[in-house]
Image (cartoon, rainbow, N blue to C red; front, side):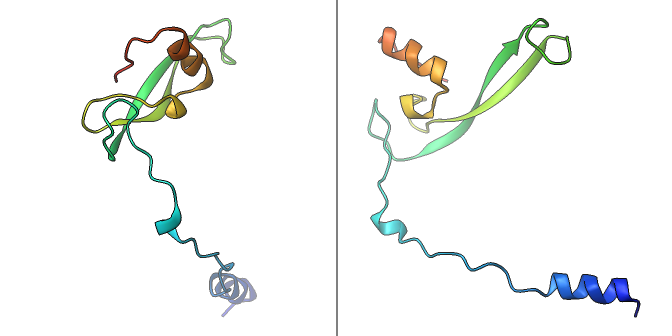
Length: 97
């Protein structure tokens, strides 16, 4: 075996950094603010970046992953990007995705 192969084998067999154990049973459960459901699904908000703001000089669509309630579609305020949080506070109507 070459020196390079030996070095690669040693690196691959090196012990992984220890991970701390977390007691998930003591973690807070999040529920839907609208209906109280406990399950969520991943959805995507799409932001349009103007050509002026874009680093490439071209208009771009940027996906932002958020969670919506699996039962009613509501997106909790804590899951929204900052601007949308502020808009939700200003207008009480529902934000569904």
